[in-house]
Image (cartoon, rainbow, N blue to C red):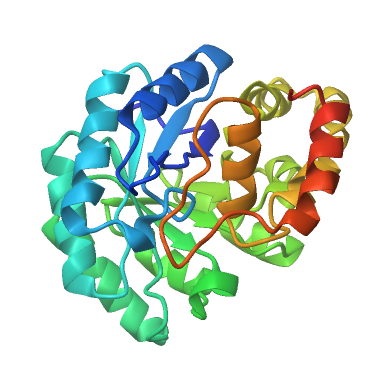
Length: 296
């Protein structure tokens, strides 16, 4: 039986060259760095990985490359969500074929399904593809909110093993943790860096993190401190990065995180249109914070 997914899970960027092609050399270096820094799992081609602007073939190619390079050292979670159920199903099926350990499926965006539509969407995919699947709720980006009671219904499916929740709401944390208390195979992950520590203190099992792209050891150490019942240590580490968490979302993700990684010398600073590079008016504030944190 596969070990439960816990701890620091990086929502990895997809490095790109100036011509828009995926920069696989930089991707390999990032993966190696994350494994050495203690990251517990890699999300490949999720929101931060620019899933919305890679085509189907590229999407699967990046996941396949990541799986092969990781070589089972840590789990690979494939981002396979789409606003079309058939496309999400195909992405999930192909990700399983290339060896992904889990699939992460964002709620269908733009077309705004109701709760019954969400249940049918996720059930169709879970019925069809035998791979552990994690629900992903981020209504600020999707205009679609998967409610905790809907997550409870979906958690009863044997292939639906968790949820990434990006809503910062303590009451919702408690409702989602209650699903785990009634179903110990279901895991709950934060998808919001500024509030993830509180989420872990409430009983969450890990974080799928944008910040882990640039501070992987720190995010891992926070998770370990909570696991080891040392909240004081977790607080001490976490408070150093509160400003960074905010700066990472000063423009649409992954614009700021890619700029920071570029300044750290880890990737080139290219994105797929319609996303463009960081507005120059934000560069000074971010650079100042990077210097304060010894990131460069």
